[in-house]
Image (cartoon, rainbow, N blue to C red):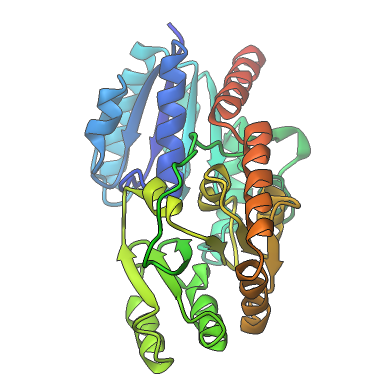
Length: 364
């Protein structure tokens, strides 16, 4: 039987970007006849039942520090389990899992190990690139980047050779949504992103204050859990007098329903590896405005509008242009949906991973 092990340090709810992609990959491979196991090293697995319903066996170790004696002890047990289950490959997500495998399991595992890079490393501390360059990367057979942008960052920052890197973009489930009646809701602008500095929510609030008089029925829905900026964002909303305009919806699982009631969707990050949120907007046929950063351009192509991440006036102008032309919004949404079907379908992503698995297995 073809068997794969996915290793991650943390796994929050599968509504998040990396977590959701991990779930979709495991689910898709199981449906194609693979046996997939999931090892969570440091955190609990909040959505364990969702994985297990798909036939994915989940192991949770709760190691506080992967490089500790406890981490070594867990690795000793896993050496035996890995040998017994004869995994054809191990896919590793996030720094802690990469470090643990490099430290304790690389020398005893004969198969291919692949480090899955989901972002461009905006979270890294100064020593992280050094650890990757000199210790982790040499111990992995391949590095899989989620976008060409991430690939180039890794090559420049960590000296990864071209031959070692593979690019497999994220895929998205069909988000074809039923258009809902919007009587009384006004002109809805939606941003789905956890509330953190890198997601740049302030740009949207500042822009809304500039055009409120031009769009009196404007409503802004901020969807995502607090990652440290909710208090300051609410303070900004109050300072701008936008309490009746901006609504904090929190973490939600009814994203298709929310998108069906949205007129325009925005993705305003200062840094991304590849935005799953943008993929979902496009799959739902929503007109998109995104910051003009390389990973957003790679995904959206010519199917949306781009703005500076530092210019509220720029975003305000883009919103107004879409507000004033419903036909442009409709055409833009249709183009985005077709681009998803061609380039970023979930089926295409799973097929690319199967090709990678075939390559790494044959190469060992």
